[in-house]
Length: 268
Image (tube, rainbow, N blue to C red; front, side):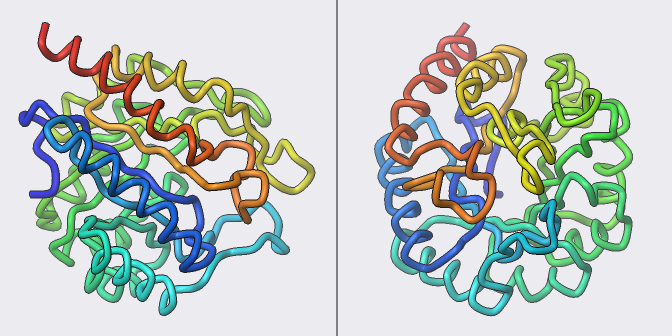
């Protein structure tokens, strides 16, 4: 098992939005590994990155290194830093290939109802993190979790990443955490995608990075078992989600802040 919610630890899924390059991925992974070692008694850490950003707003948006190079980058991260890895899968055929390297597969929010994709991910034996669609109520996540269970998933996580609120905006309903917890699997909060302004930057998604910490604190207080955080050495130069990734230099203090609240609340 990658993560046990009863362990008293906070799950941290952290890494760049797109793997972009081996250089960027390894730089971020090194910092994530340092944080994992520093807080080994309080954190369960998984490195994340996307080999293909298949749902870019514009067809001209850069998508990343692709599945072959992406899997090689994950293999290098695991070899150098001994970090378990997770990545998005968008099509059923990708699941078995990626699961040869990655310890967990992630179902993107837009695809959380795609039965064949969920079943294929579950059958790999890897942990599966399914993101709640921006269009879905938290109570409806029981069906996505149920599909994974019925398909024999070895471990299931579910992630809140905000809900569509009018045009070009997302909000997070903090009731989502206790509601989704009723499904009996860990609930993660996607702290960086939840501050997106979808399509709000002339063919790309904008965002409000300044609210990442505020929403992360609120989610932990509402019962989140983990945090999903995209981080980059220079977000403004990232090929995707440049407005919402947390600067890598701020990751350590962000985790210190989150853990302080998490440990206080769980000890109570």
